[in-house]
Amino acid sequence: MPDLTVEHYPVCESARVWSTTVEGITGRHTVTWEPGSEGWNYRCTCKGFRFRRSCRHVEEARKQHCNWNGFVKGVSEAQECPKCGGPVFIQGYGV
Ligand SMILES: [Zn+2]
Ligand SMILES: [Zn+2]
Image 1: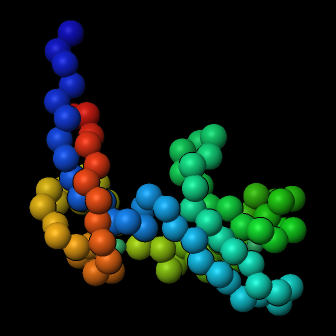
Image 2: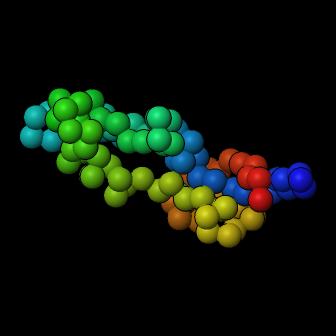
């Protein structure tokens, strides 16, 4: 069995750790992007999210989340995120 080749791609910092505050009718809530049981997930601090696993805040936050990934886009060189202009980090992917 051949070994996996690891290639390195730039990934937006917002795809590693990210959170934002969303102002809603029930107050101010924090939406966080973090690892979960099914990969990376959005979580919200509001009650609705706890019951339904989704809420308006997550939908709102998702629109603001850059989450740019050079591996997905086929871009192997970037000094900064081409989408949001933020910092990138280098992630290795087995191909
Ligand atoms: Zn919420
Ligand atoms: Zn970005």
